[in-house]
Every structure is written in C-alpha cells, then in structure tokens.
Image (cartoon, rainbow over all chains, first blue to last red; front, side, top):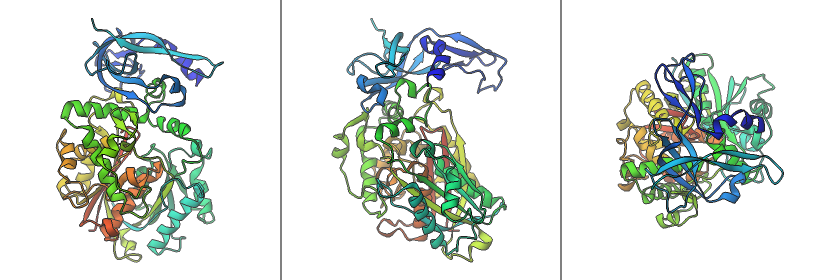
Length: 130
Length: 387
C-alpha cells in the first residue's frame, strides 16, 4: 500500500483534483481523462477551496482493523463550493453532524501501520459554522 | 440469436460451512445441476464461474482451472473461464454463459458461482469486501461497504421520507421467506423491533439490515432450445440477460438514491424480453443491505422514484402480495455467498417458474433477478419465462 499512498500524497494532503477545460467538469480525486467528453488533452490540475456542505453522512461503528481506535467515526459526502463531491471523515460529535452542515478542510492523521509503521495523513473536514 | 433454456439447477447449502472446502461446495452445486438436467457431464462444452476473490479468501487464483479439474471436465479439455465483478460475479457468469449459447457458439454450458469466505477472519472479510468499492478514495478514509450504503439510505430518508422501520420491514419479510427455504442460512423469523434493536453497523444501518457473508455455491446448466427439449420438459427460458456499469465511487455519481446501472440494465432487459415491469410475477433482488431492495423497487421500474417504501409498507412484495420479492429469503436470509449469489438467484427463479419451490411457491410465469456488484458499479438483470 505504501508506494500507492506515497504517489498520491500531493492530492491527499490538500484537495488537488482536476478540471476538464472542454466541459468544465471538476473532479476529485483527480482524473487524467474526462469521462464526460472522453478527451484527455484538456484536463488540468486544480486546487479546490476546502469549504463545502455535508450531502449525506454515516456514523461508522463496525470499522476496518486500522480504524478500531477511532470508532465510532463519521464518514460524509461533502459537496465542495464550486467543486466536486468528496468522500471524507468529518471530525465532530455524533450529535453535531447533520445534512447541510457547513464544513471546511483540515489536515489530519488517518491511521498508522502499527506502532512502528508509517503514519497515513490526509484531509478531513471540521465544522465551519459561526 | 438462439433461444436459451435452463435445463438444470443445483445449489450447496449457504452459511458457515466449516466442514467443507471450496472444491466440495462447488462440486456439490455442479453435480446437483448436472443430475437435475439428466446429463452425463461430457455434453458440457464450456464452464463459466463467478468468484469474487479466490485470491484473497483462499490464496488461490486460477479458480476456473481448479473447477474444471475437480469436476472431471479438464480430462475432456473443456474450457473454463472465471469472471469477476465483486458480488455480481455470479450474474456475470450467467450472462457470459447465456451469450455463448445465444450466439450459437455452444449448445450446452454450465454457469456457476462460488465463494468460500469463512477460511479467513471477519476483519479480513471486511477488508476484502471494501475492495468492491474504490479502495484508494473510499476505503482509505474508512468508508466500508455498509457505510457507503448508509450514505445512500440517509439521502433516501431525507429526500423521500423512507424510515428505519421501512428498512426493517424488508429484513423481516426476507427472514419470513427464508424460514420456508431448506437451503437458507437463517431459517427463522425476526421482528421489526429485533432489527431496530440490533447493533449499529453504520447509521442508519444496523446488523439486521445487512446480509451475512457466507460460504456457498450454485450452478445452472444452459442449453440451446433446439436440444433442450431432449433433456427436460419443464423448460425455463432466459428471455434476456443484460449488464450495465456506473461510476465505481459514490462521490462520482449524480444521485446516490438511484443506481443508474440498475436502471440501464433493467430498461434494456425489458426491451429485449419484450415485457414491461407490470408483467413480472416474481423477483429476486440483491438485498445486500435493506436499502438496496427499496432502491431496486424503484430502479427496476416497479414503482416511481422515491416510492419504494410503499411496496414494503403495503405488503405488495410479501410472498402473498401481487409482486413477491425474494421468495428465497434473499441475501439477508439465504446468506450472501458473494460470487455465488447471482447464480443462486437464477436457481430460485427457475424453481419458482417450474413450480418446484415448495412452501414458498408463488403463482408465476415470468421472473426477474437483479445482481449488484459492490455499491452498484455493476448490475446484471435477467428475465426468465416459461415460454
């Protein structure tokens, strides 16, 4: 998994996706080929502003091995402002999370490969409401 | 295209089959199907096998060759092909087998599906199943398969007023049917309260909203209509068998309350079979999670989008309703033997159309099965008829 993770660090540590300059569709994760107009010449990288709102969410109780210590945690689909929809964790209480909630990006740890293994970081979201 | 008939069906038990290995359960299903068809075995011209992850569950690839070997068909050199589309692998095997006969290339073939999951632990199983969605961009952040279906359920609740009780009713119905099926893993009834009080898996989904992952195998023998009559007089025909794809990850889809692959495969299946949703008498739906059955009611065209829950509230999809869904008990009560499920559905619809379904028999002439891969990136729809 490590080389596979390492290759995508740039896109995970910040919200760097892509945009098709032909049809103006925005993608995260990044694509190097637009599935809508099926052309690759017009795909460019784009950094998305890390703000948006929760489209749907779930509180996960039955977790994969690497997330045992985090349970329960919240997974959401977040629609970025002027951007694509992203699957991410939201860091807040179970009582606080709701659909339509405004959230913003935050750099956080996801999990680690045991006590001596590497730590996987990435982008999560936190509440962004006054 | 040639007309294709199902002339034999077979199935192992589904469940935690600690005493049986992969080879045993596959052979059980295959030999049952061959005997049911009245074949010697050497008439079979090709084998298609659906299996999601022999590589990780058994550390065994080349599954098709293994099955050809242990079934005695390698002795004759019969070609064997494994196909994979997560838990739609069985549906794909059925479709590949169907296409090979419909095209006129083969006259008699076997389509099987098999999975042996209990040789690894439950955490490994969760991890293997997560590979049916987008590993790098969904699995990485902790979005398990139940979590992804939970996202669909929450959205369906908010857009259309579907409730946790509606989901529970799906599970209750399927358990009630499964209690009548001697091959089902769970042969006992449960209540709505049982579902609503079961442990949370990924809210709003609870343990009894989720189908178990099981060991099991199933097989069907397909034959060209021209020779099928030599083997059976209660023929069931495959009127159409279609497949469609959708974006792998939920975040790439326009509407997560709709499975576009199901809509597209169904629309083509009805057209090719020259039937409409109103002509369907019995259905097997891929209820890996209860919300999937409600969404499928809509995406298969039985009811308009957003009104799926009405079918379960009004009892329409009960065994004695006007559109019985999952008379077998579905994945929830039969058990979900991943790569075997799509074939097990074909076995059930065939038994129903032959009038051999015992206590769970419904009145039917036309049936439909829906097999889904992962969170809906692959869908296979098959329509069956007695004429």
